[in-house]
Length: 450
Image (cartoon, rainbow, N blue to C red):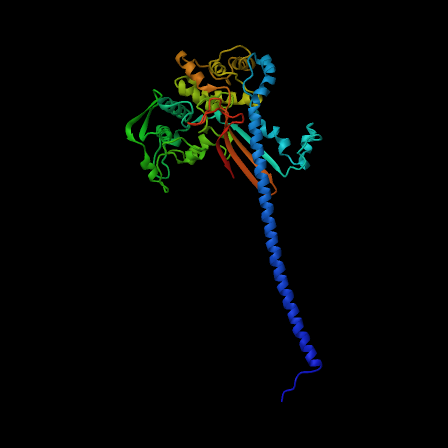
């Protein structure tokens, strides 16, 4: 016969059950607390990241807009500098490349308060400024003139045969086509990954066929510097169909510089040689798809200037002799490093330079006075035929109007980069049926945020 548990035995049993329940409760509460802590911590981290990303985005937007404002105000800065430039050179001051110094000029707007010691040492006093005491992060800007590069897109202000001839001649010359033996020949003597051999002329015509509006293949005659369509059938769409991801010719202007990768002949080697020698550095680019077709004499690299000159007068020694071309590019690069100011006020100043004309205040006269007329460092002046001088001068410009602006905002661990292309050209008009003129801060051709 069982008897009920009484006395000390029952009390100990109840205490054991209570202990188990208490331990279980504590364990459940610990799990709930850990889950709550993880959820709250994750939400806090996500919120902080989103806050930093939003602040970084607006830091980048502010840097972009301040750069546009700086470029728009360049004429006012030029008027202040003009008397000094006239006194030194006897010529009016050309457009000042303020965009080359935009990161330094905008540093007060992009530098957190605890990192301004260097700026204070330079004499910049923030004591009376308003709105600079709580910057959440920092920003960096790179602005590059697109007018200093060879345009391979449909030119903004040229149409039809003139547009095709303009692009074909300068692209052929840039790649060394006028030289008897070019150092770039090896780029056009090997097959690509699809087993296709692309010559210079194939590459030139492939670029034009990509953006022209017809479906006929373009022919290019390097000797005459002219193009025509419909001579050899339809465009080379079949070559693009052999790719892993087949596609066809666009038959419309390029929308981005990366789109050049789709064109026949734009291999990695060609890209690293002629498009963007330094990866992700827009300042190093030699080609563009945004410019109007005119080359800025003060912003273009010596290689681009030589290519444009040789596209008009390919038979001169400066274009036919690689040593003379090397002297030209080296001497001009050295001068720009020593004198970081615009060297030419107008296109004819550049033509006078390559022809060895001008007074002692002109660039070539200064060089001969400093180095001596028989110096081996100087290239031999050329003679530009009278019938080519005016068209060549008109293919150059002394001002920049289209810019790539690369602004980066940094807040905490968040980074936002905005890459935009802004057009300030006075001749820009909105597409029909709209009317108007270019805004004071320019109009965006391209805008991308990463």
